Length: 301
Length: 292
Image (tube, rainbow over all chains, first blue to last red; front, side, top):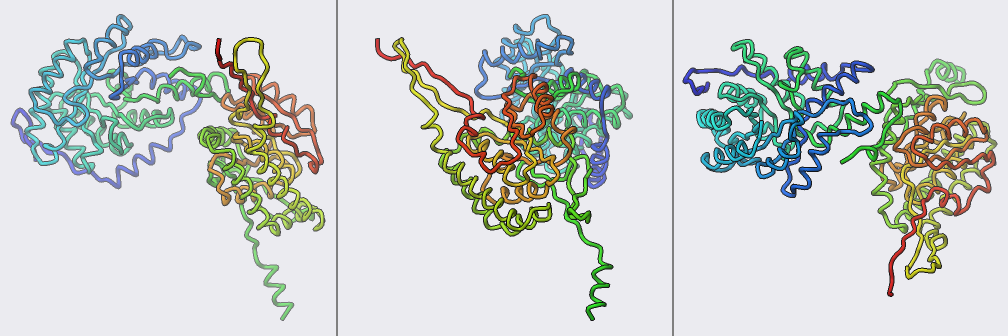
């Protein structure tokens, strides 16, 4: 049992972990080939949040990443562009200038990413600074410590106040599923985030393993489905961390299609948080078109 | 009594070993699930052999690429030690290899001679690993104020079309490639694949890091073109007397301008030289400014 910000008592259903594993295994065995594969690869590219979240990030590194976002592969000018570039708040301005007029969003992590261990005032200030610098999307982390201690009201209030600070910017709520322990806790956190104002729910920061495993994503997708059936509200999903191959990405798309339907196969409702995924997808696209196996050496960093 | 026993032997279904391929230090089956049967000269089936597909080639190249930097970074001395270790392990299993060669039609004397020659060949290249640089690198005379020198570097991932010679030819094509710091994807497409798959087991117990040698069995017309065209393969070693085979692979190899070395030998007894190593090396020349 938990309290939503509106005060209504809500309950998350228990998760059948064995059933989830089995369902995932079955969905992973789908074979997507030829034209369907090419279509899935293009869709994957358009869903990528090209990400760099390192302490060593510099303006130059962010500009380089933006250049990559603007032109994924010179030899294939007809590719879709990625959905967004995701950086730390201090570098939002750099990314915004580099991507000006391209239609590519700038996403910023905030709220003391990745640990989230800071006073709420500082977290909200960080969100406002990111928005001021031009962020179109904000990726927040929840306070896992408070959530795991059972202080659901705190977590709900935290998300709601960050949502308020975001204004028009889209809010993605990172649950950091690798720290939540059980699928039941993940389901509960998903429900909590959606009811507190999340536009997207996101698996992980990418700093902790395991990150976006298939069972975790399936549980979150089912939470989104149940939320949609109850309220008619479409919440987005963003798996992040550990998805580095085109094959993994296509498996995710299959799972989304089977769980939520065609509407969610859209960059507005589904994103991949990844840094190395784009190049593997590009490699597969060129392979699919030319019939020749490709080398990573042929693609930019 | 003896009549009863022979009836029991006749009733027994033989358990045929499936000789699996060697990729990335593991022994998977072909991803395609297909297999061929190997026969003794008298027609009795003796084993099942994986019939690999182009996707197995792809996976093997991935494994070879992943292993390449680490293998090249080993000291030349350490690579020599490991090649010597392969020789030791092969010597220790010589009876098994002799039996496999005999099952392929060799007399016991020929089989014993071939196994010994293969062991000796490994020793030969084990000795060369930390010496070929001294012999083939150079300090070059130049007219400007530069210190100018050339050294050899491994090409990277080498695709090997293994020769018909089931053990000596196989060893003679793999050893010089890995002695120089390359990693290999070896296609075994001849009539006697069993010594090659068993050699994979020898490699696996010889301190050779996984992925340095990858051995695939199957059909040449299915595997050679994807390997020769693969942009992540840096060089090809084509051991085939058939000029059309080499030519078709060379045409595929133009995609990324691979180096191609052709070995048309049918008798591999004397194919042993440090030039076998240098043919799979790239020369790097450095111009270092000095004084005024």
